[in-house]
Image (cartoon, rainbow, N blue to C red; front, side):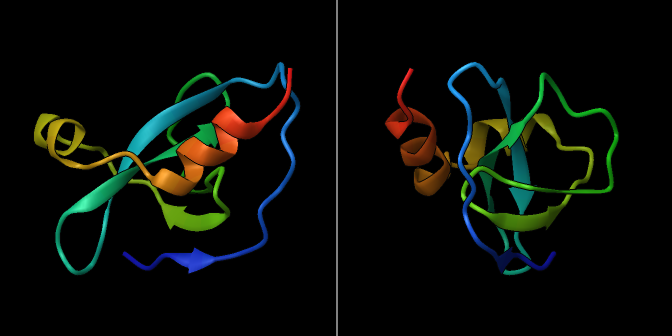
Length: 81
């Protein structure tokens, strides 16, 4: 899968996000945050850190082994209420 960096966006304090593991073409992957309550079967999306990614049904191992995206985490914890 191909990740393309794009511009980060501002998020309102009340907007909900979900985490989703995204595999990389080099092996492994990372859990990114996405706006919304849950994945609704979309083919692609833009993460909180601005990465454009393709979604695929994750395995249980993906959820366990893929680390959290530090940029998504920083973006979401840095916003003000």
